[in-house]
Amino acid sequence: MADDAKAGGGLSFKPMDQFEVKSLFGGEIGTFTLTNVTFWLVMAVLAVIALMVLTTSKRAVVPGRGQSIAELLYGFVYKMVEDVTGKDGIKYFPYIMTLFMFILCANFLGLIPMSFTTTSHIAVTAILGFGVFIAVTVLGFVKNGASFLSLFWVSSAPLALRPILAIIEIISYFVRPVSHSIRLAGNMMAGHAVLKVFAGFAQVAAIAPLAIIGVMAIYGLEVLVSAIQAYVFTILTCVYLKDALHPHH
Amino acid sequence: MATETTSAAEAAGPGMPQLDVTTFGNQIFWLLIALVVIYFVLSRVALPRIAGILAERQGTITNDLAAAEDLKARASEAEAAYDKALADARAEAQRIAGETRAAIQGDLDAAIAKADAEISAKAAESEKAIGDIRAGAQEAIKEVAADAAKDIVALMGGKADARSITAAVNARMKG
Image (tube, rainbow over all chains, first blue to last red):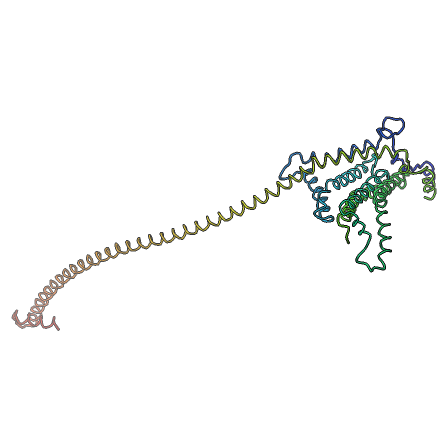
């Protein structure tokens, strides 16, 4: 323990450094500056292109590995949209697929050591979350007019309870984009920070093996979380879309 | 361990980069560009292409199933034809075998009849020869017996005439 205490003095934990937005070529960060955010967003775009476009270029009837993955992702999201929103939700499938592919690729790219996780930033996920919220709300009013408000009027409940339920429903409706975006950013940030903390403990020789095993275990968990959060974000988008298309309980 | 955690807490330093508002504009700008690019890539290229591939595969599978059904029908047809040919061939073989058997039987019967006739002819011939031999033998025996009887009678001191001795020998021979 004496060794530990001595080494402990030199330990430096900077679990949040990895989330810093830095300019690629120096200088102040303005709206149009090329930053590490730009770089990893471009990487995400390239990953989506590699995964969905390059793999399917042969249009093989009997798919290879890459094409199988592309078809699997397509079928997975398509079925999700169809199951949750119904047949009339299919025309919004490209938008939902865009969200899913972006979040999935950004999450997995963030797991590359030394990389930057764009989806761990609240600014990014808030745009996604509020984008879905605004789109769904506008769509609800366009499709259903004022009857979209019946979403908050639970007709199956006793009449006396309905105003109370309406208040609860309205609050929960407006909390949706907040929880929707913070869930994703929070999960990604927490996982990466924990990874960094474990990596920091690896500086101490005595507990380094344990810390490295810990890093490996958390990394495995993070792979799972990356995929699950992309799935959760997408299926919640589908649920909100269903509310907009069919607001009547 | 306690010292490490406190030093970690100290080293964590100020605030989360996520809450640094000055970088929000930059992030949002590039995010929107990335999303628009991904949307156009997916909706213009990737998704129609994958939908096409899946539809084509479904079509191929349906066609193949129909073709398989067709081939199966043809196979069972061919099997029926084969069975019929086999039955025909078997009947034909049976007929030919019957015919052959009848022809052989006829030949055989004729040969047997011929052989029987030859055998009976030979037998009759032999019988006649045996009869002749037997008759010859009988004559010889009679002669020998008569001579012997004459000699015996002569030895006994009698005198015998040839006719009575022959009659006696004949009577003995018959008896």
